[in-house]
Image 1: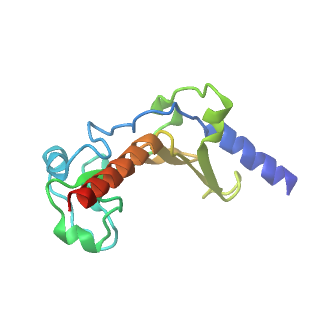
Image 2: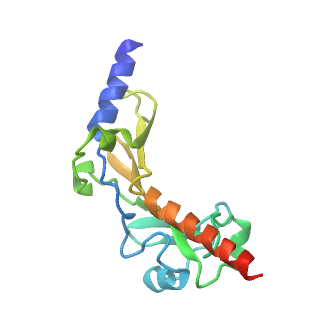
Image 3: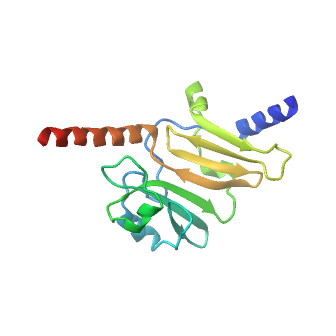
Length: 185
């Protein structure tokens, strides 16, 4: 049991990299809480039909891309039922990319952690043991709004969402506008 725990911890430490607290990392000029649906459609084209998720699905020769949306002035992510009424002004909440071929972790160009807080800010979840052929680890960093899932072949999914600071500012702006509307009425 101790051997498995040590192996899992070593695996996590090997794939773990952390980031500075900053704005969300953009994906191909698409930025969470900033890029509108009309801008995404101009970049990625029309989405593929998707009956199963709360995201729009875009594909190219090299990857599958899933985009989740928020409506300006709301703090809730749009659900699958909301996808039928998407508006050009809705903004990106999250972009998830699944490359056709796994990417080497070293190719992600991740900055080295600088402080103990950099190491501790991430959520790391692993399934299976390092000897298991289906062993995967996911690292999500709410401070930067970036994460990934990897296995023995490399990075299989990349995730981009608003950083903690951006999400707090978004929510504060919504609250401020609600207070202003109440005062006006």
